Length: 486
Ligand SMILES: [Ca+2]
Ligand SMILES: [Ca+2]
Image 1 (cartoon, rainbow, N blue to C red):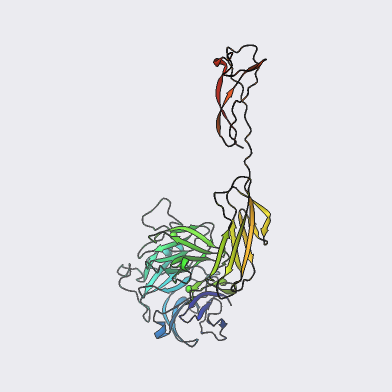
Image 2: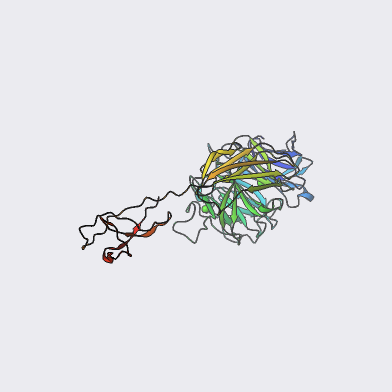
């Protein structure tokens, strides 16, 4: 793919994507890239400029309408254009919104994604155009997310937060944004989540509320000290990762991921699963989905497949499909809590492809139990071991086939702690016949942290014992002895 940026997938699984540098919308049907562009617009391609966003009209099945976002070279300005697509050909391109763009030697912070909300309105991210203070200026479209009626041209809905504010751009939905690259709506709550690119620190994901200010450039990341005028991000990243696509997995094809929030990142090329709390207003955990180098856009196909772009933008890119493969995995020999010190445990992980399609690129990971020692020679087949993570990258597995991987760990035996022998207690009335040979009368268990030892002083004839009539209790002295832990 030549410089792909954004994807849009229709109900038949046809995949449309934008090419930053050529200004072309391209189409993939049944895995085949169509030779002709759907539509081509003249683009300025300096820096971050080019053809970026694309989305379908909610009534696409009826009106065939699509929208794209790009920077025009002459005049230099940013545009939202509506066109109609029939059988892979775009017709009737109509500019429905335009706003200024500052040409530089490296154009920056254009934003540029478009999506319709559950309210039927068209939302668009517009970056601060390399001029940070514009993000706080309600008279500028820059550094904002906008909300439009999908009219020709686009128009601000009267229930927008600044619709009646004198001097404000009426389409502004929220402000104080540097360069939000993408956003999506929670399918459960309808709330809008958007990624935000920080400068050299503090990348963010934000829950965008109408009329709220997200701080740029006054607060970078969370306000410190807190400032009620600005809304803090829900999660952040330092050093920066350049967050890109934001997507809720809104189907149930992968049941564990249903309605879950995901984000891609341009710099470290990772797919992140951002786990929301029960109220779906906060992120409580970030999980890296291993082995998914999701760099730019990510969209969901009609069968629940996830499509994502690796690379793209300034370079060529590759489109990948991620789908639920119906694999069963069983871990055997996992005697958690029942293993005795000194024992060796062998784990076997069996997996079977219970789906109907061949599996390639299977990755199995496991961790070494805390306190156990991995026997590297026991790992089969060959695996990558980092810290306590074992990471197998395995070849293709055909439908119905199964395979096993395994490894052994050793639970170390606790070594008996060295006994610290303290100075024998001094006893004022010690008979001169006694020798200073302290002898513990009772053993301590190997794991004891504290045990009471009795010191017995012996004379030349033998040990004094309580049963010995000559035994003098005044010479029988107990003291606690702290055993050193190994
Ligand atoms: Ca997209
Ligand atoms: Ca912010």
